[in-house]
Length: 542
Image 1 (cartoon, one colour):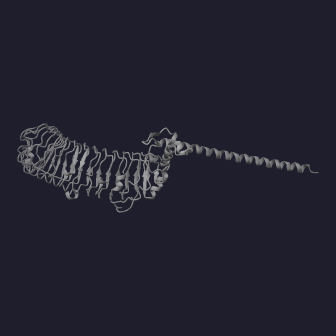
Image 2 (cartoon, rainbow, N blue to C red):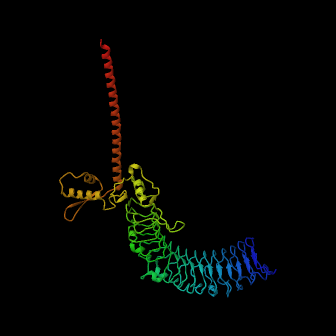
Image 3 (cartoon, helix red, strand yellow):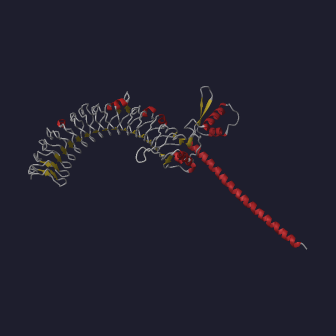
């Protein structure tokens, strides 16, 4: 049957291919047989003029040499079979070969014949059992994309991608790679690099030197403890990364490694062990729009106020140990979303958002002002009795807080006893700026040192009666009183006193009402008695 160039017999339950299967089709160029049950292929069953062949999703354990003479082959799909070795099955030469899709098999060795396919552009070998690349791609000058995820690759040789200068996308995720070993330095056209879920313990951005087209690098889910940046200005190195994923690693410090990336837009540092962000860590990130610091060990974001991030619109810092936010947003002039849920935030500084105003940068409303939204879900400040006041004062600065917190019973909630500098309950043990704490400590020291023979003031008397007051000996022989305040206990005491005062006020009101009622009744009886006497007197007159 002449003239037929394409046959699609997918999902037709074919079990075997024989020599005679396509012998009457001399012009056949494209043969599509996916989703069948093919487990047997006789030698010579595929016409030699075939250019495109799809044998994916079958039951093939071997190709039985059927492809060796297909020198016109341009692309081949053998994905989702049971193949273990194809190193002796591919045609050589194959000058027009552009695509090989061999994913979801059990292939252990990358065929070295790939070096002899000068036009190879796309390679899909994910979900196999590769352990090394053996330089099979080192001569692939026209390779554009290589997908090697979900294998068992343990190491990369320096020459594995030697001539792959136009490679744009390299996916090496879900392997066992411990080092890049300078294997990517020649990938001048690389745009996307994925090394997620590997065994890296350190990473240096010097490995990306000269990769001018690289825009995104995914280093998540490794064991990275150390990252280092270049010794020189990164701008000179033409690194133009837009996105860096370093989440789910073991970083404790950034060492300024990501600073100086003028085109970085998104930075994910969540699920690490970061305890502090220093001003040097975020210098020069003029285009940064989103940073994720969630699930770390941060106790403050104060240092961010010392770094200017002119375009940051989204900040995520959930599941940390933040307690007080004072001027933390001062370096974030256009912040629009701050997710601070699941922290220990007790107070917000009155100047927190004084230098911040949300500005929309995308969409139909680009360039217009909007409201900064702060998510305080599951933070103690949402249980503060002064929450309405806090909300009102923030709304003046175009800021809205939201979230739900699981508050303790009213009698156990902390009450707002704060200096005017803060909004919210501030425990005295958290900051040295609280005047009440300074006064109590000062008076207590005087009382203990015998500087005053008078009765200590009430605040000192209460402090001296607390079980959390410790007395230590100084080197000069004098004693010093160290007052340790328990904010919850203090809040309970104040709430109890407030409750008792309210009860007394209510009782006084009730007694006053009763007293007024009795006085009114007595006055009425007195008036009635006077009227009766007047009537009796009138009656007795002659």
